[in-house]
Length: 149
Image (cartoon, rainbow, N blue to C red):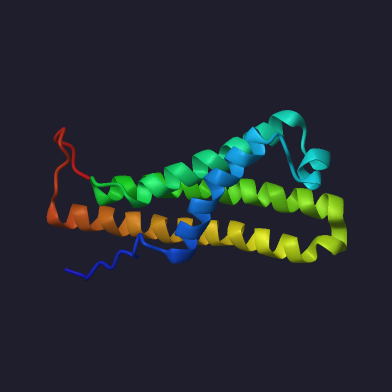
């Protein structure tokens, strides 16, 4: 049987971003402030979704990493959060680029790096979930309701 190596769920940069996202979203909402790029480039419903996405993405991602149950469930929760985080940081990068242009190249670079990192980790998780499913089929593990994995 081939050796399955699941990547660690304790990624320091990922955890740092997931820890920073909820306070950022909360402060944007509580203080009723937004970056000028967001205010000018996004309509109000999209702004609210962006702020909420920061909160939800961070909290859900952390809960997936700390999930005490099945590894596959925790990875799936983490995957959903990282896809959300990658999308909303990508939206923010587009807003910065639309408003700041070349002057925003430093900010755009860092925000795009967060988005790319989120999607990169998502791809790793997808591969890990695929390995888990294959290993489960190989050893004939049955799911609680009697279906094979």
